[in-house]
Length: 174
Image (cartoon, rainbow, N blue to C red; front, side, top):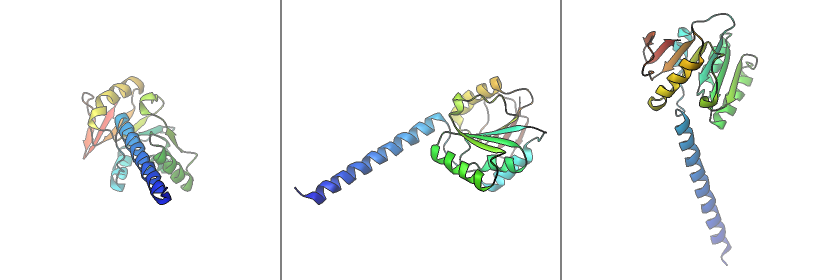
């Protein structure tokens, strides 16, 4: 038996299995929400400038990616939470929060947004994509308390009246 050929075959099979697993995870994540596209620093600053800050408020970033918006909100003193379905991004975000010493103000939750109740938040930030916006609009309209602010980067809700449009940011009030 040719041992190098056998090991080469095993290696190729292992690589194929890993690639198929990556494809399955990627499709699963895309089916549940938006792809990971980091918000640029100037976009984060614009979001911060639009948040209507009040004492004891709580903010949430839906699909928090690497945690940059959660961390930026926490740095202003706002209790901030992020919900992310990608476990690698959850761990990266948590590491960045620890490095910034913001564990007392910022948390990242590894949880599906569709299985999360957002009623305890005063501000919601998100980067959605067209195919989830109708369903997400209904969910947030049902769960958020009156006066809650929603800032959507890039995509509008289909029927929720806009309070303001600021570049690619859409601002809504419940």
